[in-house]
Length: 474
Ligand code: MCA
Ligand code: AMP
Image 1 (tube, helix red, strand yellow):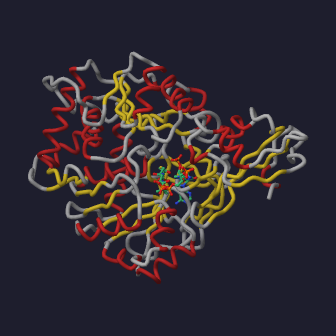
Image 2: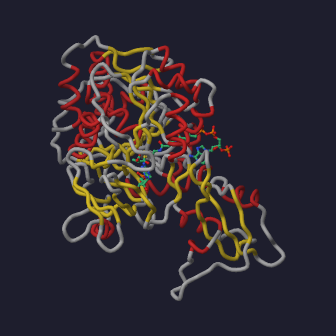
């Protein structure tokens, strides 16, 4: 089955049941969503978009954005969610690679960049202010049809589009629906961006599949989340660890206890923070583990101990094992993506000979079978739940006149999880300051990738092959 076919089954009953809220639209019902997405699909069709065409989606969370996303999927378009903080070069890479025919964006600067990069692309705001046209037949898709390109660097190299089929997305949403006892009566406070898998593939798709409801916030603050939970009688909250750190700092933290379930993921939730939330708010946060390529993989149990410092057990339908030599987490299942967009070699490298996907994460099981992630085989820094690929930042910094050599690592940090850290061998007589490096990256890399710490060193430790040995830094 396709995602929209599963959703529309649910929209056919209890059509007046509230489903989505945002600050400007208020509540819209299941019936409204069915009607509005049909009309929006008609407008996209009228503008010439056809099954298999790619459409970029990048905007603050809103009912309009959800309508555009669902309409695109109902029409068989392939949605390409993109982080709105990306700069022109980062956007150019995705435009060149995905070759989208349309883009739904809310950033005026992006409208200008897209006009320069690819003037043939149809650009619309999330309201889809396009001419009305009759909706063609919708939801005519199979589980194998591609639904989404999620850009991620995988274990190495440049950002690649992970092709997620309708079947993958459905399996991803279904596994957490079962595991977390998600019911139509649940209401999620959704303060995550809709351009990453956590907010989109888990928060939004899970809500729509279950026939539950969600309060969409266009950004995170502890008070906005707690206000929304109270005003709308919410039952669920999903967040990255940085959000939980900020909630734990709020004098209102005990209000989290009004929720039935708080889920954390995208980066490691510190065991100490898990305990503090238990003590201050009587909340047993449920930590889970996922990836863009696989949606959700492993989760602490709903019943039973939610063990701090672990991610729990494989979700329904997910097979998981550890590579005997390295301990790398290997997975299989209906949730695992179909391959990287137009990159057969990268796809081949990502799977072993028996079809297990290599996650690039290193794990171990504790005595009761809970999975603990103990590091990564891939080079990656995760700051505030967002991935930063060291190679990309290093390449951008090498063109600074004061940088002779550079390595990027992550320094553990209570609020952000890891801080992007630059280790620089300066050019004699031209030693750069942190601010110089950050402004050198302005317009080149999204601000969350800019280093927050700088260490000046005489030389980088390298192995015999010339590869920087980052574990020796710090
Ligand atoms: C914002 N800034 C950041 C980050 N976010 N810097 C480093 N890391 C970040 N993640 C910068 C801003 O550019 C700004 O820089 C400064 O921090 C202050 O912004 P602030 O207002 O404090 O930040 P915020 O807007 O409150 O954002 C923090 C946030 C946000 C709410 C934690 O980063 C966020 O929503 N993260 C979640 C991302 C996510 O959805 N990840 C899931 C990926 P300046 O001051 O220089 O202008 S999916 C995934 O990982 C898999 C599937 C999974 O398992 O879930
Ligand atoms: P992304 O490629 O953006 O989907 O990020 C996926 C990566 O986030 C995984 O491969 C892990 O390294 C990391 N990740 C996700 N959830 C967790 C978690 N609960 N604990 C530690 N790392 C996590």
